[in-house]
Length: 245
Image (cartoon, rainbow, N blue to C red; front, side, top):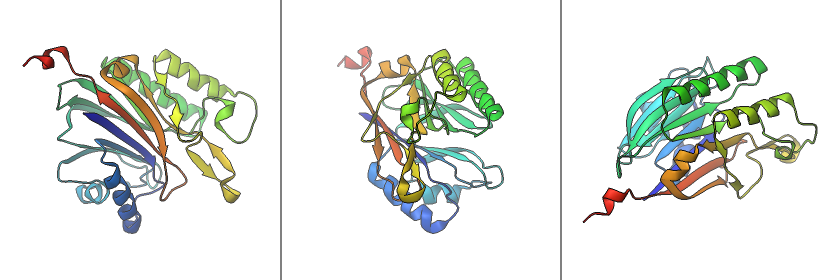
């Protein structure tokens, strides 16, 4: 069985015509878990989620927007994943899941990163607290609003303290930064989309990688928004007792 996780900053999901485009694109991907950032929806409803997600077997948790700013929605197919626990922070939402197929437990954290140094430190603290709360295999995905190195943006310059801090956090949390296939950037804008940067990514723990084989992260086309979708895909490894007849 393949696990597919999709992350996308949609730049607002409060317009019904826009939600139809989002839903149609998601339907084609047939994902197990979807993380949408920057929903800009202050109070998410069941009807709103159903207009974004696909299928009758949908469950969800949300970090509501602050007014019309931010917002993260995580939804999943209950036939693939069973939720055991969850935590909502200021800039992230974390869900502890059990795979229905093989009973393996792991954690997903959806992120919409802030822009200021002080607020970024709050996000890094949230991620550290999540790591301390659950020691299970971990996958973190979303729009971090920060790059990791100079090569991840069109405008060249020096390595900044924010980049160094991001790298330090990844190292301290013992996360793996997966390579991105089918592109070098996840956002583009400005005149003729000449400005670009890799603001969106998945980070995973080594123990999460141990659960899956042939894990890949790739960029998908964007029907709307100035952010590309990123897809994380891996094949479930069979547990030894499951081999018994």
